[in-house]
Amino acid sequence: MLALVGIGLDAKDISIKALEFLKNAQIVYADTYTSITSSESLKYISDATGKEIIPIGRSRMEEKLADTIKDASRLDVAILVIGDPLVATTHHIILDEAASRGIETRVFHSSSIFSAGIGESGLDIYKFGPTTTIPFWSEHYKPTSFMDVIARNLANKEHTLVLFDLNSPTGTAPMPIEQAKQIINMADKEGILALEKKVLILADIGRASQSIKYIEFSKIPSLARDLSGRILSMIVPSQMSFAEEESVKRFS
Amino acid sequence: MLALVGIGLDAKDISIKALEFLKNAQIVYADTYTSITSSESLKYISDATGKEIIPIGRSRMEEKLADTIKDASRLDVAILVIGDPLVATTHHIILDEAASRGIETRVFHSSSIFSAGIGESGLDIYKFGPTTTIPFWSEHYKPTSFMDVIARNLANKEHTLVLFDLNSPTGTAPMPIEQAKQIINMADKEGILALEKKVLILADIGRASQSIKYIEFSKIPSLARDLSGRILSMIVPSQMSFAEEESVKRFS
Image (cartoon, rainbow over all chains, first blue to last red; front, side, top):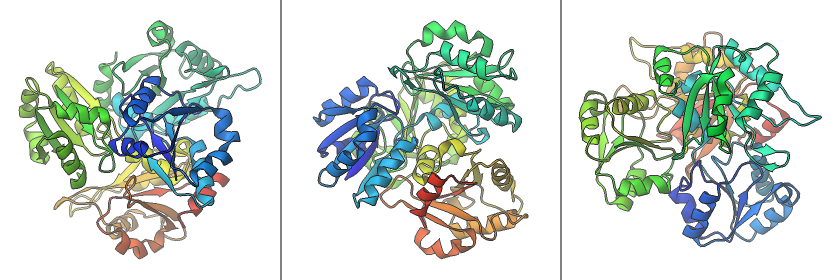
């Protein structure tokens, strides 16, 4: 059996059901490719289940998929994933591969930035357009499509949840807020966010260290020190209702 | 302290962190107003924590909010909520009320239909427009705005997650698929779904009984028997990529 196990946003966010499954699993990997895997979470899970957790980087996840699936034909193999495990396409590919070889699969859901981040913001989940991600830029890869999503959502009077890439070219590390702002500035040719536009900056959602700031986009650099090293995302609000305005005031 | 505790989609979906909190809470309510509260989940939580769980219906949730908050000023009060607790606006009102009285609040996130439902469908979460809900109709309340959301998302080449109301006029019971189809037929004046359009019908997402069907809208009545009494939602796919087409084939 091959199981994808969501470990949520915080240490001990893993479900009772998932933890019980892991106690009987033979191999437990942790996906360190598509997400930053909190060492605190992994330590807790390892202690609580008595299992060694094997970090599985990009190479093993993609190149050695066949091996992993072969193991799953005779053993219970679990792959731990931050958040909810089915949000990333990579994990669908793994499930489909396993299923096509007749291997039983299971999915353990958990808390996700999609529902928790939007929920914590106090903005109406029914008013969110498509989510987007700001990827790290490299010399030859400078995608700006995330800006099109934000612009289109604003035109449609929809809020946007904007995730910041977690996979830097030099290894897994969250995108710092200053870098995100620089990339947005370069991608935002129409100056949609440049001047007075206020956004929500979300840090460490679902953890004790959670913080949310409602701040003018241009003032983001003032947050850099506080937010250093933390997992970040942003919400670009469209037109807000009175209740939504009241709700985001808490974060001013 | 007042805590909102997400209990997720399945029995034992509650997080380790939340269960530990409940063991030390003095009052534990279960919100039976905004969601169908699985008796299996509540039994598990009650057994595991040794706490009596008090169902808190619409009257107590709204009329007796002040009492609940007064209790929370001297005791640890928890309110159990299906899925992730901050998705419904009601819960924000409770948190805001408590916070404005200087009462400490906590939120325990969990799996949600928003991330898990979209994830299980295999459709790209980045291509979903706003979610909508089909409410029960009554003699004097026949809202059709959900149909506008679906139509606009389709025009924008975006998929739509459509939730079915869980609060029937005669008490908490999930909307049956035949009733949802009837309401859609009456609301869908332009016939967007009527003929050949295929949709995904999601039942019991995150549970062992989970089923997903990719089916022509007109053929929904053939599912009625299988889906009787189950918690349902629907995804109206817009234009799909090749990978998405491959993914939904599993559900044909």
